[in-house]
Figure 1 (cartoon, one colour):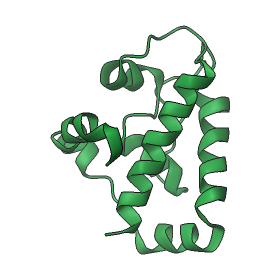
Figure 2 (tube, one colour; figure 1 turned 60 degrees about the vertical axis):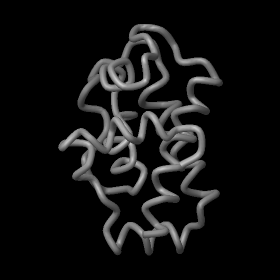
Figure 3 (cartoon, rainbow, N blue to C red; figure 1 turned 30 degrees about the horizontal axis):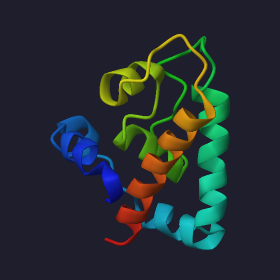
Length: 118
């Protein structure tokens, strides 16, 4: 999985992170919408729900289901600033840079692409 082998190895060793999988319905949604649209959704979710320096409901802003990107965010620890700090070492209480946002989106999309190929 690209240059992310180390982080995916660590995530796969977490029983919580490892339990997240895309359902057949999720995979069909991705097929219907296309990866570009899904990536745009990921960008939008990261920008609006994760990137701000202070998030009122941090730790609860990403649903556990309802969209393939939400599932991927939990699987890749890109779901809240606490998890992002713990797993990706990006500090809390600062606005994410464009580079940091792109990194998180790329991690999410790498996981999604791996899942749909299974």
